[in-house]
Length: 249
Image (tube, rainbow, N blue to C red; front, top):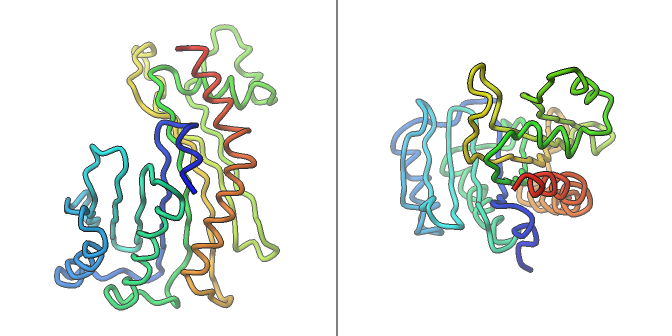
């Protein structure tokens, strides 16, 4: 099955994030060994760099339409596949990372605080992102009444909502809409070709409850995210944003 979301946005990606309560190893030999194990399965992941003081990243060429990346920092393991051929193709990297992390990094289920599966949608627009979001998602909201004030202009409209999907509230879904054209005094008309991002985040907290195998959990969370993206995110969020962008193009 192909990637059904590639036609509704400029970039679509599937990310995995694992948050730990104890710090991940920072020894050079340990980290290099881990990255080498991943590289054996994905030999095009050749770019190795330190992006922040404690974050190391291994990735494919970002100039390609589709690429994978992996990062390790002090308390988080993350990876992603941008513009995968299918959801299952994206999960190959995530499963490989979860397979190697226990013995290569010493990652134990006991120390995992939460795991996120993220579906991301980027829509490029060189204009006022916040006006687009206000028009497409907030027009019928009482909050948009502030825009009726004389001379009012949207400069920071980034709605977010989190809901529980389980009785114990340990499985949650969050929608984040992120704009990148916040107004600056004296520069209100300068907007670069940035992307509006919509994130669907499914998060599973463990706490003191039983711990499902992470491989099974990854599959079930991804399947749930796909259904939510099909039934809600695309028709109710992505399509209206695209329509608002189209009226300004």
